[in-house]
Figure: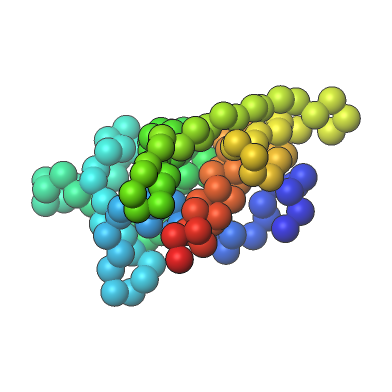
Length: 143
């Protein structure tokens, strides 16, 4: 993946959104593409038809890559993540982030801790890419 460009493939966004949904503890239905999650986004007008406080949504409709009200809870959970060896745990220092402007391209750059540096045209796109990269590493480290 070229990290200096905005992701063009919808598939990448969906797979990144699915990774985020799993990290957030959303319940995945048998079809593998629909998730049940707390209705935390009332301003998004996700319809909780049964007034249960939970909604179901196709992961392809998730808006982590375009809406801060979707992405910030993920970043906040990453900030509070603890890592350890099963005996000792320490608070994970994410995000010791930096974001700055690439003077040559005009793109925004974001890095979470020592992970890869990402660049995109908007801060939310860059942050989404950095979060997905971090979660990919964490999911591989858990196995």
